[in-house]
Amino acid sequence: MPGIRSSTRSSVSDLVISHRAEAIVRPDRTGAHGVPVPVVDIEAERIAKRFGDTSIFADLSFRLERGKATALVGANGAGKSTLLRCLMGLIPVSEGRVRLLQEDATGARAAKLRALRSRVGLVSQKHNLVPRLSVLSNVVHGLLGHRGGPRHWTHSLAPAASRTAALQALDKVALGHLALRRADRLSGGQSQRVAIARAIVSRPEVIFADEPCASLDPQAGEDVMALFFDLARQDGVTVVFTSHNIDHALRYGDRVLGLAEGRMKLDATGDSLRSADLRGLYD
Ligand SMILES: Nc1ncnc2c1ncn2[C@@H]1O[C@H](COP(=O)(O)OP(=O)(O)OP(=O)(O)O)[C@@H](O)[C@H]1O
Ligand SMILES: [Mg+2]
Image (cartoon, rainbow, N blue to C red; front, side):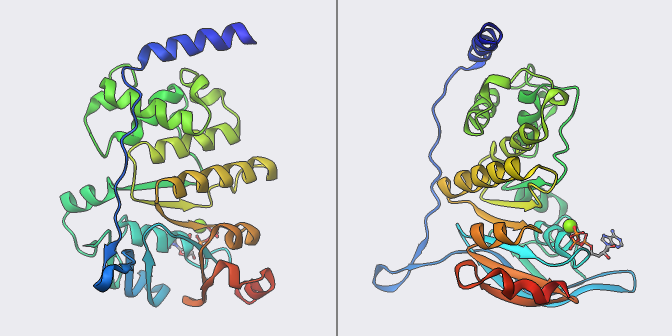
């Protein structure tokens, strides 16, 4: 319906004060003779996680480079989501050390952890949008950890710069025209794209995505994955994602880590693997 669309557009454009994107500068370190040394954004050193007496994983060590996408695969219950939450500092590890963005996330004080998390984005299987609020307000929420304060609860209270950033993020997921629609009036694919906009609005340096397209039909899932990785690569974001879709893991993962029986049973580059190589993880 062109009439409705254009009227929505004009009310959205009223909200835009300035539409200039800030460039993100994420230099690699330069070593001897000017050769770039890859920066490690996430480092796990002999980490273990237990819930009570139950060991979920133990003795995991890996280093994930800036700007790369890592797929974390494994059977249901293998511990993928738990590992993501440990890497983000949402839950503590039982042993070992996690470094996130060159900061020690193990045992960090709450304020330091909050500051670290504000540099990190999260996309989960359930998009967790606030249903009664507008799409734009939901994206503004992505700035809560960053700029903070109750002015970020709804788009109408948010400072102009925050609304502008949210609109830019919505444009990137091609949903600028739905900015004022209630979140509960969206399709599953649209909701997940809004969740991606909410995750990227604060221009995170690292994004953790836990089964970002698991609840979508195959076509919407393909679209969401392609869009998500386009955006992440454009901004040089470091991504760790879980997926039960082996094809996605191999296609979008520069590196693939496989968890089984509490150990890292696979660590390889995506392009060196075929789907048959992953079968052992699901036995
Ligand atoms: N807070 C918790 N307390 C106790 N056990 C937990 C807790 N969170 C997860 N677990 C257990 O840890 C194990 C790993 O769960 P996790 O959700 O990390 O697996 P997953 O690999 O993400 O599985 P899926 O593919 O189904 O998402 C499971 O046995 C789960 O029951
Ligand atoms: Mg999980």
